[in-house]
Length: 149
Image 1: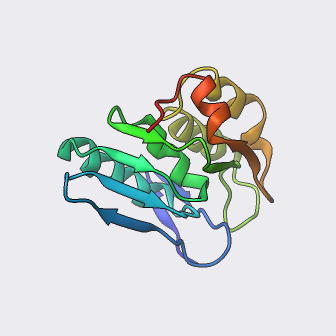
Image 2: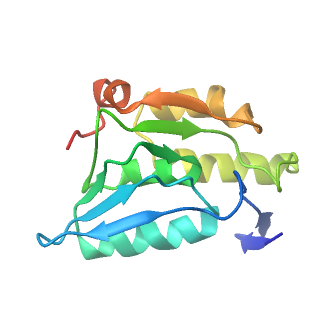
């Protein structure tokens, strides 16, 4: 088990086993994300900072984008495939509930990367799911205002 300190809170995000991220850089300088099952919030925040600074287009086009992968849609240069399935769930400590303050804080950190109305839905509903994921088709997210590739 890996425990990460983020703003004074211990955060562990585990979906299955090791996070699986398939990234590929294209000749045009864009980054393609495929079949990413998520990972640790802290690691994703570092990736988000680096991608934002790079200005590279981020294309989420794999079959799935679960857990912290969904935070990538908040990048100004990100776009998604209507065929990708996005999976949302709440933060936990290795599948166990977090202390309320840490849970609320981490939920807000994750939701910060979602456009409305996705952010409101996540905070009201999806964050309360600790086992399994709420699945949303990319086409539905595009209808909510997420940029299509």
